[in-house]
Image 1 (cartoon, helix red, strand yellow):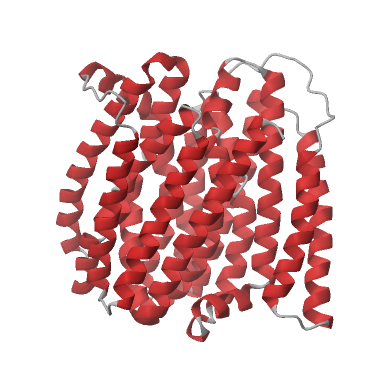
Image 2: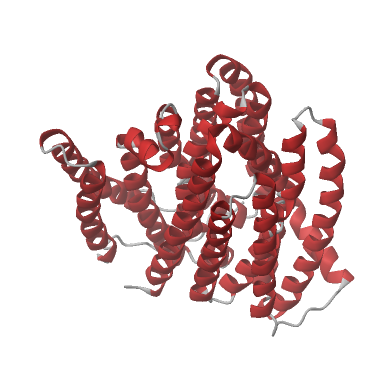
Length: 473
């Protein structure tokens, strides 16, 4: 197995563990506090994640971009990125504390928003630490820290529930665990020399501007329908959507971690115009994403009723239809970041921004039409429509500007589709004719798919990648 594939496997395994722990914490909260209280908790987190876009406005991408050009300054860029984020977080807390009182959310939801600021917003600092570790090639350390963070969060949640705590006490406990995790990240990078340089901060901010616009628009079209939903539907309906969204969103985070952790390699290959290496890199990442995305989306779609019933209980049963729609969105959204990253690496941020603005307009129009009519199901459909447009646009434009080979990607998708059809046949054979419990069906199907996937991924690519110059901007 190549080093690239080994790194992807390491990242993916740790992400699966992290996702499982995080999902378990969410399930415990839903079951422990009930659907109505969980709905209020969901409103608070959706509101804060909407404003999370302010803190995800290209800081780490500018850090990666500058470090790929001047590797010797990595530690300086890292320390000043942290300083920038600390300042923005402090200002943002004051901003949110002021505007939350202007909303018409119930008073208890407003209090939750303030209490959950730390566990939701402070991790943006941890993201920079993880970026630093991936630039240094420390994928194992990065993976272990992700697992540690999720495990501590789960233990904290479980302790509050066992002690009969309230939602407010849960938020306080989660804040404490987040502070402990953030402190641990600083201990790990203690050997890094933290220096303040106004010139470096200016350089980071200048590099950040195009990334900031792109990141802002990405988060806006993803989060705006959810924020609108908190005003358009009751908390119980929001709880149904959030429970489904947590399942697919967690899987999407795991899949996107493959691409995001390899951003430095993609940036370097594009900037060096190393087309042969770039084609092989794209093919390997695409194959890995295909293997995971096809299996995850189809399995969730087929067993949506069973999954919701098993994880959240009968009170959340109506969430199954939302989960089916989001599983389709999961398949499409898993591929978009790869091609979006290629566009960014080529330096075509403005062109990407145009595509994102169009996607945002589609999202807004769809939200205004579908959410009032179909409620939370309309939110799921809205996200899927905008995702389809974004993926197709990214793919076409990335291929036009970089001219990477599409045929190996089509072959890879076709191979995994055949493997998936065999797996789905196992699912229905067990579910229909033997009446096996869905967990047994999933387990047997997963084993079949895993064996086939490992065989396909281990095969060396025989497609030749002819050396040619990357297309000029």
